[in-house]
Length: 76
Image (tube, rainbow, N blue to C red; front, top):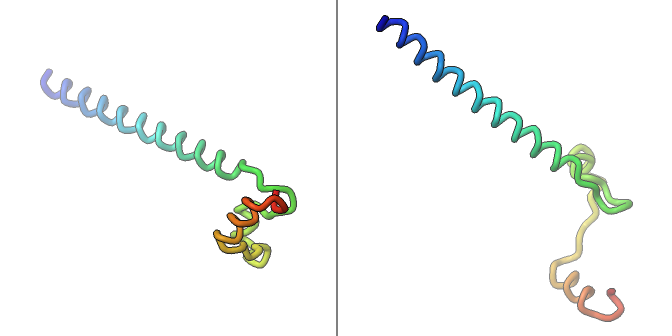
């Protein structure tokens, strides 16, 4: 009887570990889908395209220049 309870306990812990592995894999798949599913602005490459083809990445202006263009009336 003692051996049977040990086997059942090991099986229970194994099942618990398996369930947690499944939970983490579902969360990882959802995160991956959400990140890939984000759309870029029209005319700009997505993150996946930019990784595969670095030549598609345009140089962004420095942060101060972007902020100044946003604050100026003409930049809006």
